[in-house]
Length: 140
Image (spheres, rainbow, N blue to C red):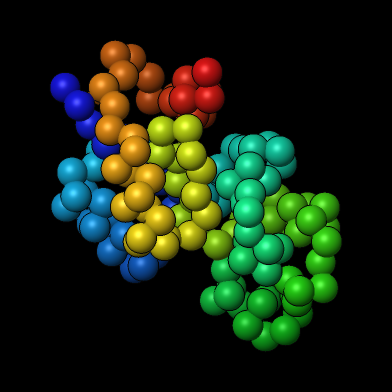
C-alpha cells in the first residue's frame, strides 16, 4: 500500500495546525503527530529543519515574546537562535514536518505539495509508537 507519510510536529490545540493537518489528510496523507513543545529533538536535528532559511524565518512571529519585542530574531546568530528555540519551543515556527527524507519548517502549501509529490512511499511495516522511533527509521 502506498502512502504519503508525514511526521507533523505541532503545538497541541493550535487552530492553524489543525487546519494544516486537515489539508494534509484531505490530500491523502497519513500523519504521525508529535507535540512540538515536547519534541525530544536534539539541537542538530532541530537545526536540520531550518536549512535554507534565514534565522528570523525559524521563529513563530506570533509568539508573545517576539510580538512584544522581548526577542528580536534578526539580532540573533544561528547558535543563539537554536539555543533559544531549544529552551523555549513555543518560539519555533510550526509545523515542523518530515516527509520522506525532507524536513520542513512552517507550512508553505506549494512547497509541501512539491515534496509530497516526490515522496509517496510504501507504508512502513513497523509496530512502533515510541517517541522518535519513526524519525530515526526515516533517517536511515
